[in-house]
Length: 112
Image 1: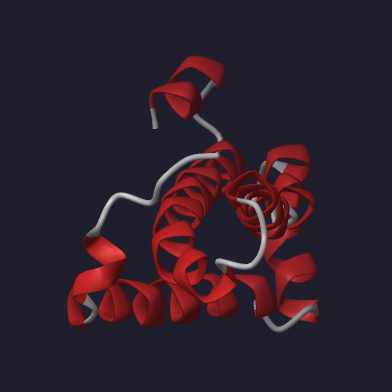
Image 2: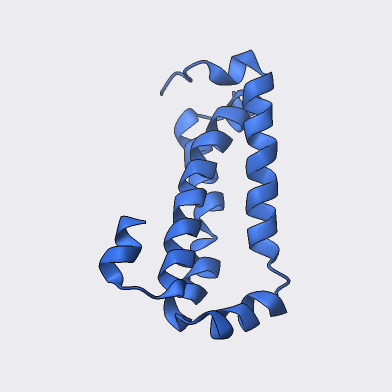
């Protein structure tokens, strides 16, 4: 949020930086949840895949950063049915629930 304030008071900045923050949190939670299922892969590969998947949304959220005003970026997001917003929030809720319900996910994953 500090980056959005630094760049200026445009709604698009807040959409982008909030989305980026959610994606960062999503990456951290997804790593805890998914890593135990992929023990046959090196941990660094699992982290790279999770990192790539979570940050692919930057291309989606940058629409708000580029267009800045709500009426402009809302038209673009609406044309995509706010798909990534919904997918990000739904998977984040699912992963957080899985971490809370799975004691193994709370363990520190050993590094390569």
